[in-house]
Length: 463
Image (cartoon, rainbow, N blue to C red; front, side, top):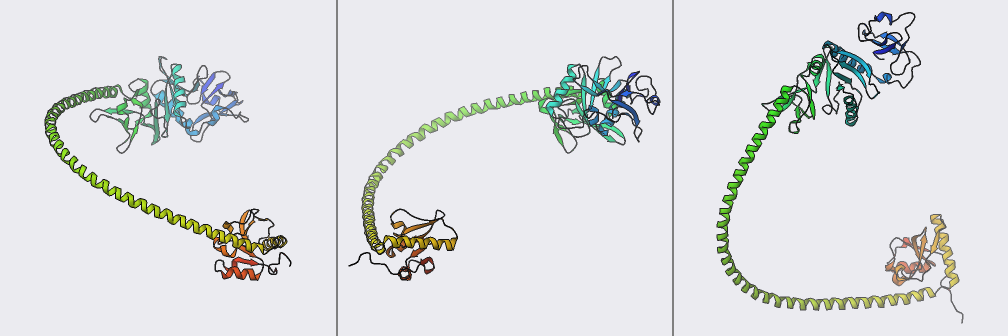
C-alpha cells in the first residue's frame, strides 16, 4: 500500500489530502467506473484506490504486481506513522508531500515538509526497520547534500537516537507524542534532561520555526537524564536556543571554577614545596649526624663480622670435609651395588643360557606354533609375533610375544629372573613340569602361566 499514485490526467495524487492535492474528489478515483488508470510512482504497475476498515484512504497495487517494488515492504504501522507526520506538518501551516523521491534518486522521503515561502525543506523519516549508525549517517548526508533537513522518527528504542537528528514517539490516547530526543538544560544541576511528552505537531512546529534545533552536546554533558531512575549517553539532541545558551554558560562557569581550583592547587603546591624544602634542610642536618653515628657502628660491626667470618670459615671447612667423606661412602656403596647387580645379571644370563640350551631349534619353533595357536583360541587373531632380538633381562631372558603390536606374553622366561617380568603378561612354558618349576618360585601367579603337552627337554646330542 502507498498514499500516492500517478493519475493519467492530473499527475501525482495524494490520498491524505482532501482534494488529493490536485483539486480532485476522492469519489472520482475510488470505485469509479470505468476504473481510473492509476499507476505506482515506484514501479509503474497499475493501482486502485481503497479505504481501510478504519477509514484510512490509500492506493493498492492491482494483481500481478512486481515483487521488487519498494512500497511492498512497508508495514501498516509504517504507513500510519507517515500519515501522522504528514498531518502534524500540515497543522503547522507547512505543506507535506508523502513518498517524495529526490531528483537523482539519492533519497526518498516518507514526508517532505516545505515552508510556505518554499525556502526550507525538511524530510520527516519514519524509520521502523533496523539500521546501523553508519547507514543512517550516510542517508542523512545524502539529504543534506540536496539542502534538505531531516529528522528520523521511530516508535522503538533505536541505537542511533542522538547520532543523527532523531526522536522517539509513542501513541497516547490516540495521539502521537514525542517521548525522547528533545531535551532541556538545567543550569542548577548542570545536566540535560529529557523534555516531558509533547504533541508531535507541537514538536514539528518548533523544529520548523527553528525554536528547536539539533544540538551537539558538549562532551562533559552527554550523560542525559531520561527519567527519575535512568540515564543514557547521547551525542546530540533537539533543544532550544535557551538551553544551548545555558549549557555554554554552565561550561564557562565550570571552566572558571576549574581554573580557580587549579590556582588553589598550584598555590597549595607551592606552599607544600616550600615546607618540604625546609623539612629537607632539617632532614639533611639530621642525616649527617646519624651518618656519623652509623659510621661508628659500622666500624664496630665490621670487626665483629670479621671474627664471625673466621668462625664460619672454620665451620664450613669442617662441614665440607664431612660432606666429601659422605660422598665417597655413597659412591663406594653405589659401586658395590652395581658390581652385585652385574654379578647377578651374569649369573642370570648363565642360568638363562642353560635353560634355553635344553631345547633344540626345532622344538623352539614347535613351541612358538603352539603359542600362536593359543593366542588364536583366546583372542581370535593371527597377529602374533615374536621378538627377533636375543633374550634380554628386560623379559627375564625369555622371548617377547606380541599381539596386535602390543606385549602379550613371554615365552620360557628364565626361572631365576622371573622378578623382572611385567605383572600382566602371560608366561608360556613347555609343559606342566616347567610350569610348576616357575610357580614354585613364588614370583609368578599360576593363572598367568600357560603350558603345553610337550615332553621334558630332549637330548641335544646322542652318546
